[in-house]
Length: 406
Length: 156
Figure (spheres, rainbow over the protein chains, first blue to last red):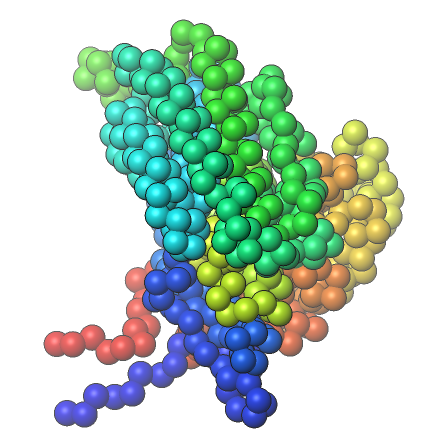
């Protein structure tokens, strides 16, 4: 039997053959130069990109629909899979949004640990972004330096959470467990090494002629466009706008920390690289402050509306057994209402808009994912530049398919 | 800081007091669908220069069936405003904000495919996360979670 032709799932905004002096090429959705499954239709005049049409959705898995069929707790593993380079930030952003809706008080130790782990995740995210984009420009040594450090961090987080990438470590009301013995000592060792290797990368590429030629004045995003297109995070800061939710609307314990918000000048690829490098320094500085702020105490609230009772009590007394059963089978009862709350994730404003009808399942979970919004303006940074510039520019946007396509 | 901004927004946007309220730190303004475009324009004048998000909430059985929800952020005052408008199932159409905010184009495309909300003035509502030829609107409550629409037929 002859194979049926498969209909084209994507309709580009411009058809090939509209102009006879240009060529339309389709790049992706599975292309070595696009980390992330994404398709870019580029209309080329010689080597220059005239128009670009960015298509995402190849990783769409119905995250928001699926959440509606799960209890508030059972959604947490899905959050890890939004931005899988910094899963803990997603966990904590979601949990804090639910906690605000429930008006649950989170213990001090959990708040400080969440801040610490958020910054640790930001480190791994920025390292991934910078390492991958440097590798695409041929800087293999810098890539290996950085992913080596990242792997130390992954192993170290695995010692705490039990998983290298998808940790599911946040809980509504706190954290899954406390730090294992010796974790903070190892943390300091890794931070010292991270400082060292980030310094080496600075030395390797910052003043490298090839690197500057590929990055400086390429993929320029203006301040006006960045704000109009809803850009947040390092992308917005690289254009010189010092907006950071950690400073502007402090959450967790960011108000107590001393840190700077690095900004760029031109909003080009080089600035985006440099802003991320500087943010890593600030993250290391913040992690050390968080270690000093840590005090002994519980890591999850005693509020029985959302937190599971102690396992010993579940086995020993009927109230706790029923409590456990109700929380697992029916989910925590979140008061009816709606809320939008956002954290400064590694890529920008990660917001959750939740609607509850008072049930154990969310009525609606909507994720305002920075990568998705950034894709909406990606053509601005591609048009007018060389086809080869698409690689470093796309790398510097750090599009994460998991949160972009949901 | 936030309170006076909210007062300013309230006085410029809401005709009556009961249309605006403060919910979990965000000013929520309920509007008629036709008034959204003008309200967004006023918000932009008031410093709400960042359009964060548009989505919808489906309430089957209620008339009008959909809530369309917009979020705005002010990068100078660090506060958010939420606009809400109810639209019926028969004509789920709201004005597009693409002329005011660049980010609206992509987000309205997503809301259109997921809920079937029409955005008057947005000429490019092609599928974004879904594909050409997808039937239905998956985030509506009456779309079954298990439904499959494979582009490539399964082999036996």
